[in-house]
Image (cartoon, rainbow, N blue to C red; front, side, top):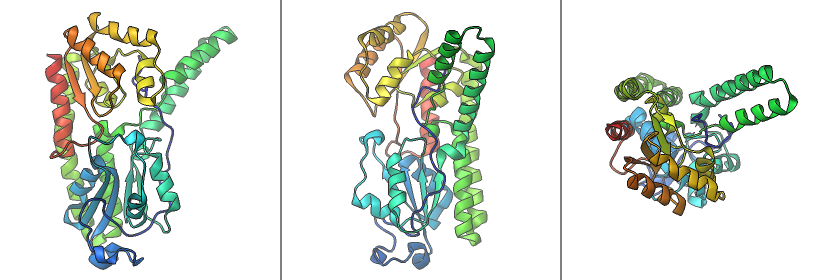
Length: 342
């Protein structure tokens, strides 16, 4: 079963915003300038960054150091990014940003709306576009379609195969669980901050390199897990950790209809739920990795069934847990899954 089971389409890389910042729940740098229409960076020398989640906020802070003031719009594991509704404070923050980091891939569509209604121009980093993963997924989907068409000898069979390719080609927008993509995002942050502050460009580049070097250590842990557990089965409740599991050599055994219904909040049939519950007693699934940030009666049933059948479980989240940084968080996730595999 293919890993790309998340929903989402291509976002935009650059949208109109403005050139200063406000802070949500944090002390604003130069807060007396709020509403003056003058860039915080121009007055204080600090570049103001607004990130859609604290995942990107943490990466920006590591790259920018004391040259940036970072605001993370979604910064708590108690918030569901899929159902987040922006308010006037969020709008104000985005409207005054020097640099905005969004996820893209229809994960955070409210950011597009906020950027569209902003008055001036901010640099915008779209993590999905920087990653290149969506383009790669589309190329693979087209290759599958061409192969299906070439092998098909009947119009009905061809149509069915193409539909199958479309189902499996849905893009997984949770790109922050792909470590190499976050190295690219860090490099892009360094480049954009460097253009805004040329005198600090070398510092930003060095910080991004240090971040990537640290992350290389986690990538090595993934590769070691893949060498030992290649082809073993895993189950998920949502597509959140799929990039990480894929790089660990694991194969998704979850019925596709289950993870799609849970992520999209759509009705889940009794048959699909029953099919999902049965995979844990089959011996094909070595670990259940579930999103504890978004739960439902159905996901609770799956978790309970896995525990009943003796399948180890690992909890993950969409946002950075309090008191952790990105590298440490991903390292802990990889180690937890590896430990569960035994």
